Length: 310
Ligand SMILES: NC(=O)c1ccc[n+]([C@@H]2O[C@H](COP(=O)([O-])OP(=O)(O)OC[C@H]3O[C@@H](n4cnc5c(N)ncnc54)[C@H](O)[C@@H]3O)[C@@H](O)[C@H]2O)c1
Image (cartoon, rainbow, N blue to C red; front, side, top):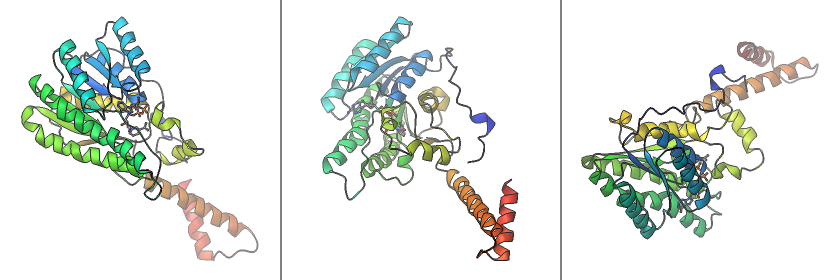
């Protein structure tokens, strides 16, 4: 691809100062031991929230909560299998007991299964839908009354660009399109309870379990297709989640924030231009040879394209 724009550098986020954007709020983040959950917990706590990390893999979330407490931040880890009703009941009872209420629910727990329609085992289909779709449904069903009783708040469902466009992984796509859809139902149903509901749609995010098992060539293909030429950092997605969780987004419900640096909106035009340029360059190279089949008109047009792109 062409040289990257200067403003897309990958420097680490430096926003560690506390500005109180979530002051006084209690926030529950599922998938709290994952790449984005850990980044979100840190960000939320530094913005003044009491943060509850929840996951089925305990060690990273528990360690993160413990570290944050040593820094004077309010944090708790709870074991939560989002696909289990009783697990949600236990986690929410603990939150009510320890923090007295809840204002923000981030449904971030997620799994992926890389099969298509013909070859997906039905056990995989069920597993992905249980975690990615039934999980947030149960979470909203049980947490919304607590959020209402706590004075209202915000639900943020982490969908994906796979919930906006086509993708190969059928169970994942079904779950993320479904999650995008039920977020609208939540926005409707909880409107009178003072609860906003929105979805966030990241493309590929670095430092996460979901991108860890990438097949050979995945990173190289992404570098060519993604306009910034790199994956998102977890904190870059969580900044959008923070905005939706905070009162700064008080007029936003039933909406979607796409965090993909143009992957779904401008990547096609960009890649097409690149392919066109490569094709044109090939024509020019062919025309330079003594025996060639390119017509004079084609050669002229190809040269013009190459010249325009230079
Ligand atoms: N990583 C990406 O490229 C990407 C892109 C788009 C959307 N997403 C979505 O972002 C969300 C966060 O994922 P991530 O990127 O941090 O990946 P991750 O794999 O690092 O984190 C996902 C977390 O969910 C947890 N989890 C799985 N099943 C669970 C269950 N039954 N109950 C509770 N927790 C469970 C996992 O243990 C893990 O800690 C997911 O919903 C994912 O689908 C990720």
